[in-house]
Length: 133
Image (cartoon, rainbow, N blue to C red; front, side, top):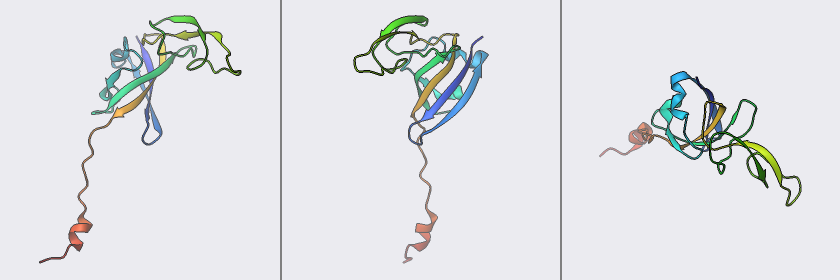
């Protein structure tokens, strides 16, 4: 069975939360692609929407959005996920993983794209200072 470590980031606050999923709780992620929106209740965040931003497998090989499939491939990269060039124009053949989540993935990165609407707290201080007629 699949076992995932899901890192959920909140872009508004800059914080992140790690959730470990195993077995049937991990099943909703299998077959999903990078960029897809999933329900937050999978990772104990009800009424939230999460966008899958990437991940890596057991050996640390990163997933890349523009490589199709779920397996490993050797691709010539000039920058971006999986390769940081040291010189201008440098290209290198690197092993990366496709954009589909399989059971070989260990870590999944996601970010919160939609939160539940917040209820406005009633301000009792304003009500007490208002003049009475």
